Length: 194
Image 1 (tube, rainbow, N blue to C red):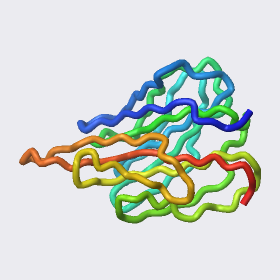
Image 2: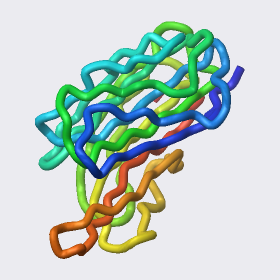
Image 3: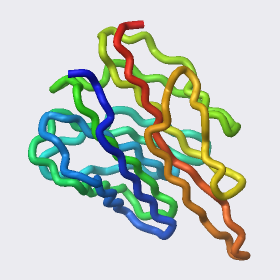
């Protein structure tokens, strides 16, 4: 079966919290894989993901100047509920998480390689990709940022990626002036090594 994105969902909280509960729109399919891309401050981390029917594991973490991204995954799910509980090590405001379901992935090994990139601008630069060692792979690229105005979402990811999900939300300062934040995931399905 070819790899395919099935569904996505997201949740963010602008008030202090240590848990997110994003909800998939439809029932998850047995044997599929699920992923979570979570955004937090640099001093925080995801402590666990509690999700009936899915054994989640940390796949990769990257800490930037002002934020941290963690990618978690669970393969070969069985009877999984539609709402994982994503638990963070400490409470903070501005937590965000995107969850994704994919079909057609292997039953055990879901990480081959990883790579990091950072930068500025409105176009998503996914950076260089690591050389892969197996055919038929799903590549994920997570992004976070601040944008200057409402509705100014990131566009046109590089290297053939497509935006799978992005969540824009606003935070207000003491004067009521908003900063628009964005957190999301790009994906790319490849069929050969390289």
